[in-house]
Image (tube, rainbow, N blue to C red):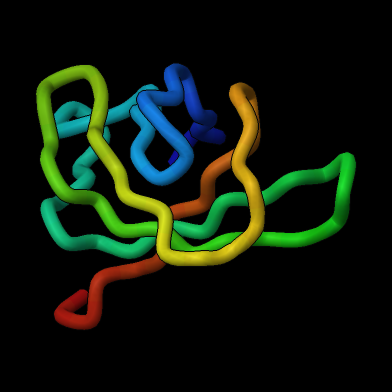
Length: 78
C-alpha cells in the first residue's frame, strides 16, 4: 500500500487522510500517525470512509500536524 498522509486537519482530534475505499480502507480500522520530526506516533481510528479520503479521530495524546505520515494497521480478519 502506498504511503498515506494527513491532508486536512479539522480540529485537534479529527482529520482527513488522502485515501479511502479506493485503497481498501475500512470503517473502524486503526492507523498509526508517524511524526518523523519529533519521533513519536499516535494511534487513530477511521470513523468514516469516502472514495478518495477517510475521516479519522485521534486516540493518542500527542499533537498531529498537516503532512504527518499515516500507516494502516492490518485488520484482524485478514
